[in-house]
Length: 281
Image (cartoon, rainbow, N blue to C red; front, side, top):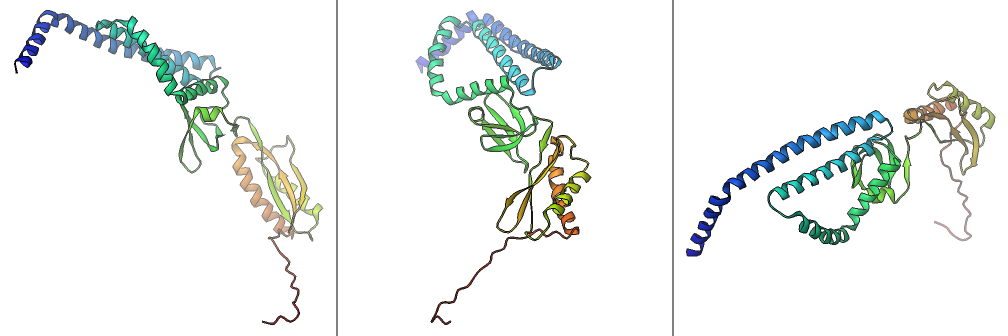
């Protein structure tokens, strides 16, 4: 009990001597934090406007630069706050160097994600909104930060892919270019006329207004399959029209071939039964 009372008395004595200065320091620290917050917000806004005005920076790279800038400025502000509270920065920085080495060794995967994020931001293999395949995941790029890339799949699932996996594997960007080729395989029966079927398929492509004249479409026999003679049908279209062309050509080909009396066969199998002498059911 006596020790507790002595401790309380020491606190009262410290506040009596240093309370005024401590209160001033606390107020100054709060001002630094509040002003720092608005300064960082202003810097981010100005930097964002400059990057957009340049027209040479993607949304991903812009987001990366803004995030790094914010974190660096906050570190500077916290160093000022610590110094104002009477903590020596020199020994702290030296201690952080040793601690940083230990933490860095323990967080190699996180650092790998960070390094990969920098490479993605600099090389810009995709942008927000692009439809991509990353490390086995497919979807539209929704967001990218320093650690991971977030995709939204066509069936509305959210997929988060670590940046190290993104940069360490093949990146397929389906919407980076203005045009795409639609690849279809359409089969006809062996008894059908190949030339007539080819003309019908060409007419289907010609009637579709979304299909581009250049480069030209391809309709050729590609395979003698088990039950059909298969054509490859390869029209070109604007990337935004890909799925509309895919579905409309499939439907149009079926209707046109039916109208022309050309059979689209289903898989068939001929079974030959050889009787076994002496066997009776």
